[in-house]
Length: 165
Image (tube, rainbow, N blue to C red; front, side, top):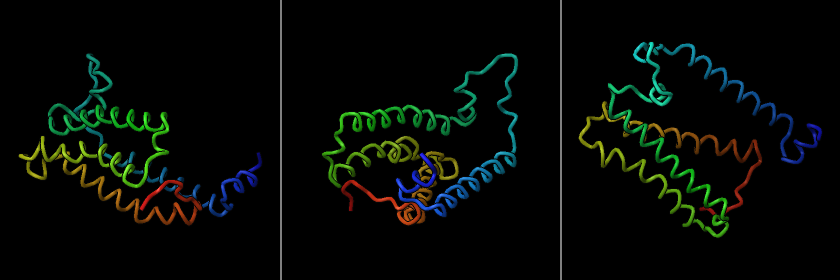
């Protein structure tokens, strides 16, 4: 399949493809720049006794609230990913209407939203990692929905094929 026939099959022009490639190049360059500018911490040096891979990926034990929330996120991610997998594998999503999608998505996100309200309400804002993480995800989601919706529809010429409001 040639590039022209591929672009025609997905209704994308060469200019749009160039724009998508440019965006990805800028994103990769930005990530690499941030990666090299970040200060490395020495608190997790691997000495003669090797730590487990999970200990290297998680926040240090000296920050228990952040570590507990990250462990919760890892465990609960298995739950919601499995839930979506079952919904897709069984084809149940084909019977969903607007409310079905809303109930599933809100149901899967509730544990993340309730975690800081139930398990860490006593922490001040500057120490409540779970609350700050949720606020950041909210800001990021708003920006993504506000700006990238235009990109999704205008540049990629995409459309929804499921019921929505």
